[in-house]
Image (tube, rainbow, N blue to C red; front, side, top):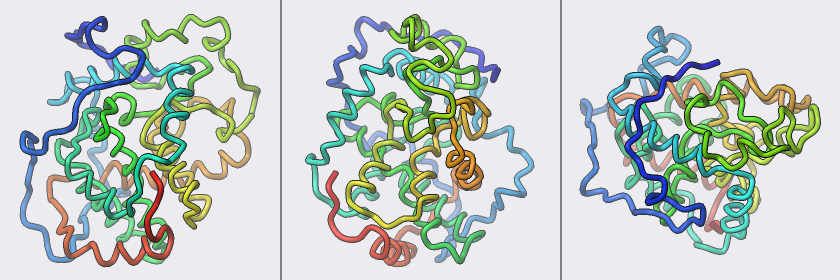
Length: 316
C-alpha cells in the first residue's frame, strides 16, 4: 500500500459540494501565486533529463509538502463524490460537445488562469507546465512530433474547472469506479469513507461490474481532464496515433501505471500501451521546474503540430 498519512481536513461536507454539481468558482488570475524563475533562453529546452533525475522522491510528496493541506482537501472531496452515478452524470453532461467552439491553442491559453489544486509539486499556471512537458519530450524524442504534441495537449481538459466545475472532479489522479478502490490510490486509507460506492454490494468487490482482463477501454474511470480531453480529440477526429490517445486518457492513472494495481482488468492492448504511458509520465512529472518557458518563441512550432494532427476549430 502507498502510505499517505492524512492530516485533519477542515471541511464541512454538509456545506461544501452537494452531489448535484453546480460548483464553485472561477480561478482569479489576479490573486494567483506565480513562482517565476530565471529568464529562460529564447528556445526553452529543460535541462532536466527525466532518466537522470536522482531526487525523484521530492516529486509527488503527499506527506509533508508545503501544499499538503490544499492537496488533501482536493483529494478528500474527489474520493467522497466520484461514484458511478456521478461519473455517468459528468459524461452525459460534457460529452455532447455542444458547449463551445474553439481551437486547441485558444483552449491551451485558457490554462494561464489555472493552478492545479491537486498538484503537490508546483504552484504556477498549467499552461507553463504544458510547454515544459512538450519541450522535455522534444529534447528526448526529437523525431516524434505527435509525442511532443501530446505533452502540450495532455492537461487541456482542465479548462473544465474554468466553467464552474470543481477542481476535485477535473484534476488529480484517476481511478476506476464500479469496483473496489485499490490500495495505491493516493490517500486511499482515509478519504473514501463517505463515497456511496465504498459499501455497495457490487462496486466494493475486486472486479465489481467488470470481468477479468476486460480491458481499460471497457472500464468507467473517475471523471477528470484525462477522460474529457481524450473524448474531445476522438470526437473531433484528431489524427494522433493510438499511443498518443492512450497517454492522454491514462496519464493520471497513477494507481495503474506507477502503483501496479488494476492489472486484473487489463487486456493485451493495455499491457502493450503501458510502457508508452510510463515513458510519457517521466516528462509530465520530472520537467516541472520554476524556470518558465518562453511561450511566445515556442508557439509557432507547436501551432504547426496542431495544424497537422488536430487543426481548425474543435467542438468542446
